[in-house]
Length: 305
Ligand SMILES: [Zn+2]
Ligand SMILES: [Zn+2]
Image 1 (cartoon, protein in one colour):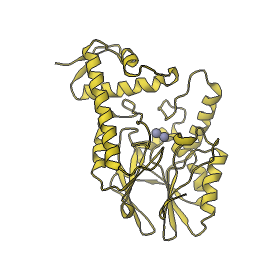
Image 2 (cartoon, helix red, strand yellow):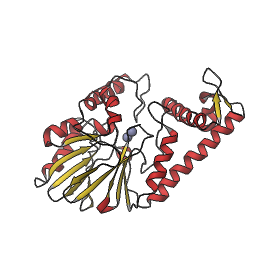
Image 3 (cartoon, rainbow, N blue to C red):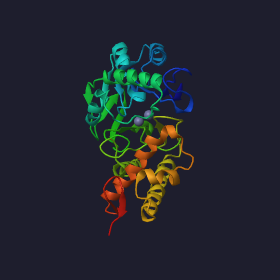
């Protein structure tokens, strides 16, 4: 599906992957002058990979040079190794992501939380994570590096926060910004406390993205966004409001992340409780770093000074 003649989206069929519809991970193809790059790979199940490969096969004139992974999460990376084998494209990633990508049995939070009683889902997730671990990077890229695809310039912007090695890609010739899970087309982004994520760095990353002259944002989930600076500002405002709320709750004596959950998320689905807890902990970690709260032991917090 063409978004512009040089930017395509390659959806996977409904029912493939792990979840589809508006929440499915987006896979983009950037093409110019007989060369191409994928931005993210999507899921590694047969149907998802097949959909992406067929799209490439319909364009035999395009040589795939890169498979750029915005971050290690398996919804973005588990198809990468199979796509590399079939296309010869090189897998590109920020060095800070590799350890989490390879450690498929580790406890790094993903974009999908698995309820403890859902054994079948847990097994599928393990399979996806195992596939993701096979996507050993061929090329490491740091902030400011540019990749050439035909006549196009893909500038790497390191945007830690959602994960520590999350990157965005700024496609200069189209003023297009691929944001991975740093900014989504729908809803807000899940941020974990260190070492897996960082709320303070996340806000800095969003501020930095606002500085780019962007006509089109292409997120890791959801639809393209045209009013990019408004979208980024919405995400920043949401985080700042949440931070103030957390601070007020600490002042009111709700001294642990768990105690705050009921007030912050009154209709919280039990299944996403761990993810919600991590969000609040990420805010508390930032407030502690800012010198506004301090730990009082046992997961409790108090105002500082
Ligand atoms: Zn994701
Ligand atoms: Zn993610």
